[in-house]
Length: 466
Image (cartoon, rainbow, N blue to C red; front, side, top):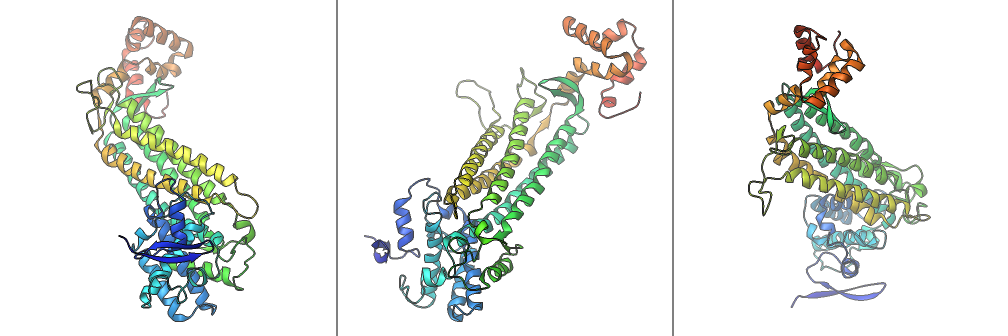
């Protein structure tokens, strides 16, 4: 039978596993919040954010004479170990919870306190030597420590997302170069438009995704403004004079991010605007990514009764009843990730709006939605790049034949024979099945030499003079 130790809080005593570094308040959260099944331990950057915050707070308290040197160094050492990846299994709290993040804040306080106790040669739970509340949470409240930890975690997670986005941009750009001479038909409203190259199409995918790198970074930069020192509602009760500015300075030094103290801590404590705007950036990326996946599925449709301009790498059999069928499973799964991101962004909107007065108690679901979006998008970008984009090949002859037989190339005749006559040619070609090329010659509208020059697909890929 598992051994336990007894710990107590406002509500009384509770059994906690003897070997657990967390304590009574974490245990209550485990018992109370069996909600999503996604635990804090699944989000290592968030745990690191908590450790950064607790180390910065301890350093500030030490420098202001509130914490003795030995205890400060032990707390800092414990936080460094958590940042390095140790003890992450000791954060078993569900990401979605009541209490405005108190359970997560106390989870961090308790784990760090018990690590310190171990370093001091004491038993877990001997909090008179190092207390989760009196030492680890000194000069803090959940209402400043928790959102600051979220922001530090999101800053780190954004770096990973941007790195993956940069890689897929490179992959699309490489395909753009590979397909630079593959002439195909461009389409608007799913109808033939004018010729282009497959390379131009893939380069456009690279360009549109590249735009989102700066959007993500710019929006993430709002997370550097923190409310440490605000304590409960922004008035700074129980925090010493100068704490807010010094803690922000220490947090910047510890994390490497240009962290600053919010100019109005009462405003900053309930404010969730930075989360809303960053979430919108993940949604924007998802919208573009889903559109590209829709295009890939269309361009590879067939192989005999679709466009079939490109081949996606075959990843698995596509049907339990239709032999030989291979489906575009990678773009399909990325589409579904994007739908999830859309929904999470709406969750962020509702959660941000739902804050009342001096605190937004919905930050747990808000932060979880954004972190889930980042994780999903990171995995989707890697999967799409590795299992789809790099292996795409072009059906060059099919692309060229579609151009030659397209009604759309009549657009190139507008400057030479006028819109009305071009329309007549297009209509007759559509009704008779005859080609635009043959009709123009049969009607003696242009010489073959001039027609060949105008309708050379390569001459229709960029602006030129008559």
